[in-house]
Length: 424
Ligand SMILES: Nc1ncnc2c1ncn2[C@@H]1O[C@H](COP(=O)(O)OP(=O)(O)OP(=O)(O)O)[C@@H](O)[C@H]1O
Ligand SMILES: [Mg+2]
Image (cartoon, rainbow, N blue to C red; front, side, top):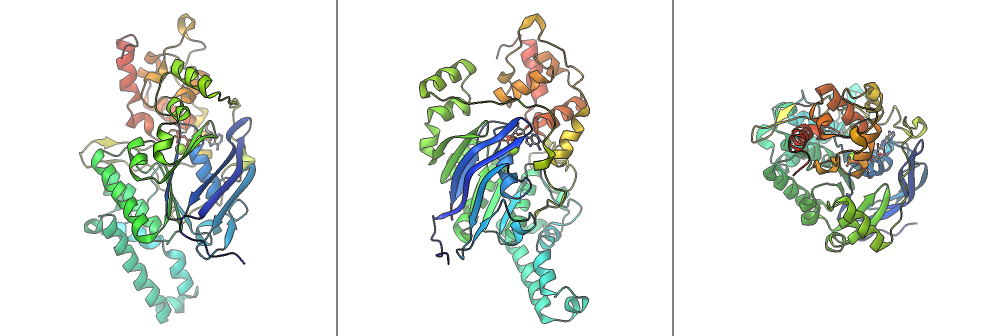
């Protein structure tokens, strides 16, 4: 019925996608395409809705409106928003990694990659114990799984550590292991949520090499959420830019990089310039106010799971340079919202002297998060400087920040600004 798609035909088509949480429009009427065999980057400031797009594609959220169509190699089309979430990896062959690393930290690297192939092995066993012990079909599948696991450990440059527990790996290596694990499931579309976040330059380079290798040798299409513009510019074929859940730019990396709307929204011009640039491009947008609790009707379903969906708690680790990198607790979005009960201990009702500090001077705080901090009673550098660990966790849950406050050292930055009276 459907013609077999050629390379560069769309593998993923997102049409008029909207996702609302109560009064907050996290994604508003978003349409874009990812082409087969390409690396498509989804970029945008914090809170722009990137992870929400992934959650809709991978069945964690049921979109409020819109269609998400995946066209497989055979030409068969899947409407992902209608497919039960467990069928998205199995049938539509979509794999993902998470903004928070999710590995079985106590299992070895090899075991992590074998567990990912569990479905294939169970099928080969005919779902019987006899099948496990007797049939050559299972033995063959089992040998193939082992080969595939070794293949991806080699590709990810992790074969030497195959028998070590995953939790002992440096941060960047854990990121590569997650990708290797997703690749063991033979995906047609690989969705990576900020794989380069928190990596040092060497780790970042190793990641780029792995992604380029996947693209070149397997033809797997990659959808990549990324903050690091150098990664985006180096490896992506196509870039889609979101701001406040709406698409503001779509094209090849060079055209996106020079698009004034992107410069204003993403590449860090200051607030007054943003207004100027936006006036220039006559862009108007609606920022609807977040009115509290997540909308459970569209929230993650209890059965939501992905092929690579092993959930471990926080993995504490140090990177290859010996620095400690903290990753916040790997809870689901809904659970993170539940943790938000704690008020920030340094909150005040209104800015002192009627005017707030320019919190966006802290690297990592954009206009959206500044607004959220204000809603939470944080207006001054010294308030952030005095945060306790509990405050950081509460703020991360509130901002959906997944460990970034620690990694970007907001407290250190805030202390410096508080001391210098806001000077750089
Ligand atoms: N389950 C939820 N309930 C309520 N609001 C949510 C939920 N998930 C996301 N949001 C809100 O939707 C908006 C988009 O969030 P999302 O996590 O998709 O942004 P992002 O672009 O991935 O940001 P970041 O770069 O910080 O990861 C944010 O305002 C966020 O607070
Ligand atoms: Mg995100």
